[in-house]
Length: 518
Image 1 (cartoon, rainbow, N blue to C red):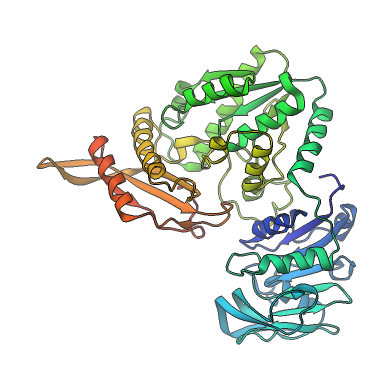
Image 2 (cartoon, helix red, strand yellow; image 1 turned 135 degrees about the vertical axis):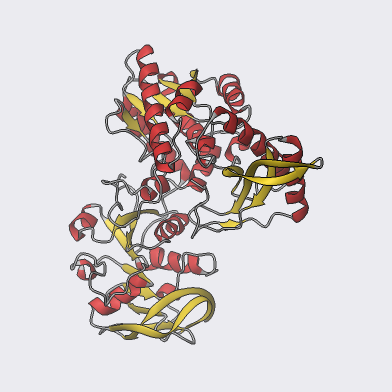
């Protein structure tokens, strides 16, 4: 990322909220990236970092092997804010004391502000905050003072204005700390003195220049899916290089009902972008025959996806660049070696746009969205003129319905799920809830159950309905859909889909579950 923007970094110590912290900083119109916890001070200064946030984490600072930063970090002169584990690390490394607390504090708590300057400037003297810790600071390092407390935690916030080092025991990044964004703004604006220059307009201008410089007169082949990400990439690339962009839609056979026809119509009639439709369904189904492991599915689909592009691209002549809609959470969650945070993040699943790529793919990548979160992409898309009906579409995985079919993926099973999913999404739209939930879809399970239909015993498929609310997909809660809506969906599925006799509703949140089942 060019240094024309002030940069704040989050050092990740294994926290589930590291990306969320970065997202909150960006809400302040300040660019923020996530780095591994042990990144060198030399690298931070090379990047002209203006502020550092130490994330939380599952470890205890006094344990052997607890993750630690560069020993020079706390004396490097760059402003620092420690959150949870980050606060405890600051306290311990600078001469304070941290011990296991007598009482674990988890959930909402009343925060009493003892010093209404710096972090708490302009805020009331009592705030709601979200706690999640077992360890606690029992004595402060020299030069630090207590800034806030709760009934159970004396040092709920500490700081040394002279050193510009602060720490909070609670989580300001989560929605359960309503004024948390104000605390983050105080750190970013007041303590770090950064400027809010990270805007959609600036991003577009920078990317257009970068893309034009990188591509020159060459052509770019875009891996188009028709979703928010790839459509926004198409709009950005088209703005940058015009007819040098060729959009190729690979129909792997795992799209939703009538999806391929809708995508082709949209790009040919509305966008007037060079568009090629390749029906490769037979090849993908053949490659997935007998495969049930979700990671293997993703690898096979990713491999075939790129190989198909390579073959089709050769027919078009020399096209060296491949465009993709990779987003920042994809890069981080896949924990690919070489990314900023591969050392700490535990591999959850291989993303179609990142970990699923074969090593020798024959293209140079153009990924202009890889610094962005999902909601930033939507804002960008609107700025670029992408229709609202596309922007408001719920996320859809790169491997499509293949990872919503648990077990082997066959044409018959895809057909069943397409019909079921069409009912689920259609009824949620009719109920006016489509834009209020983050994702809503059906999952075909690898089990059959006994049922009774028309006085006859049946032994048919089971499907699960999944609907979640979220702001950024990093955390999600199961959607409390009305019972009458769920009843209508269930009745339609079992009455209209002859292969299904049972419908269940997934009431798991993320974490501990993921949004997708595979």
